[in-house]
Image (cartoon, rainbow, N blue to C red; front, side, top):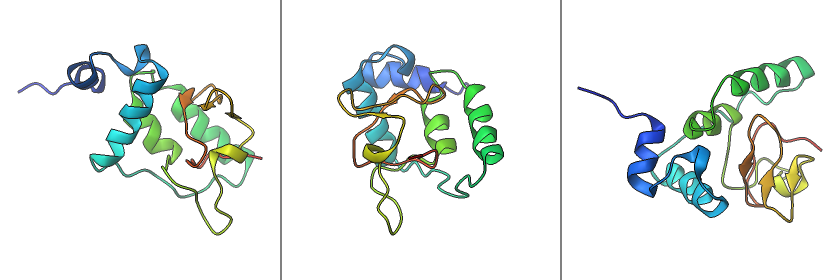
Amino acid sequence: MTTKTSAEECKDKYGVAPANADHDTLIKMIEDAFKDGLTTQLEPFPETDREFSALLDELRAMDANQLRAKLDVSGWKLSPHGEDEMRCQECMYYLVHRRWCDLPELNLPAEPEWWCRLWRI
C-alpha cells in the first residue's frame, strides 16, 4: 500500500501542489485542512528568542509542499487567540494589503482574523 504525499493529495484535489498554488487556492487549502479536522500545536507559546528560533528551525527544514505540517508546528488557527484576541492583522509579519504572512519560514496567505503562535508585535 502506498501513501500519497501532501503534494500529491493537493494535486488530486486542487490540481496543484501547495508550492505552486496561487493565493486563493492556498487559502482554500488551509481552510479545508481545518474543515477536515486538522488540529495544531497552539502551545507552548514561544516566550523566549530561543524557543521562537527552535520553531523557526523546525519550519525551515520543511518544504513548501508540507502545508499541513507547517500549519501544525506554527500553531495556525482560523480565529483570534486568547483573552486579548490576538490575530494576524496586528502581527509584525503580516502584510495587510497582500493578506500574507511574510515570515520566511511560513510564507503563506493569511486572513486578518487568523493567528499562529509565531505572532509578534
